[in-house]
Length: 306
Image (cartoon, rainbow, N blue to C red; front, side, top):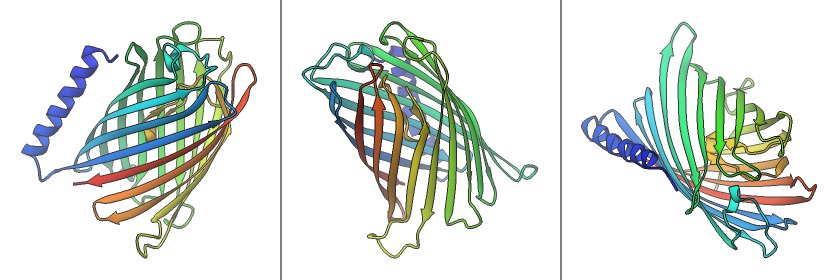
């Protein structure tokens, strides 16, 4: 379960956010992301499906500073023949429960010298079951966005400290480098995210894994709610394990390799203060026993600002 200092830090963050929002109401804005995810596994001898619900609260001070607090609840339904490691399920159970706490902060500075905005980012994720802590994840990095909103760069480093993996405690180091740009027209964006993952537990994999996530975003003319504001298609190249998806605040603690993934999602502008997103992701996995299986991920996210 979450440690006392993690719960205390989260509580202080919420209290501080509330006080600052009241005192400087004209300069602070708030937003909530409410998300529901369902994953179905086909051909997996240990997993049937997974359900995840969560909420992220962000408070922003102008365009200079923001705080994040998030909570997720996950239930994994395993098969009768399940024999999975404790980093996923603790004791083998048909209904495995996990919880995740997320705390983060972003700080932005603007410079005419480099014609853009520089951001500093830090996050801490805590992943735990009712019986024990699974992992503590620490992330930090820098980003750059030019004033024309046509070029974005970021470099992030993540360390995931697992406390009860397949064989022993282990540490997973992950480095991300993202390059995003608008090729001529601001109505479209190409994003390439390079990922390197290294695990200290050589039983799982004894070399650094390299991969890339490539996405194309197309913004559409808004003609009403049935027409999405934007469409995104993407694909994974290379192999990934224990990947932390920073933009989704998601920790994939499945020890099996994910060697292929393709996704599409659409975003609708409901009104000036709310957006709705739908996502579908199809992935292929392989266990250390060379067993292959597929997963189908679907998600609904509602963003509300005030």
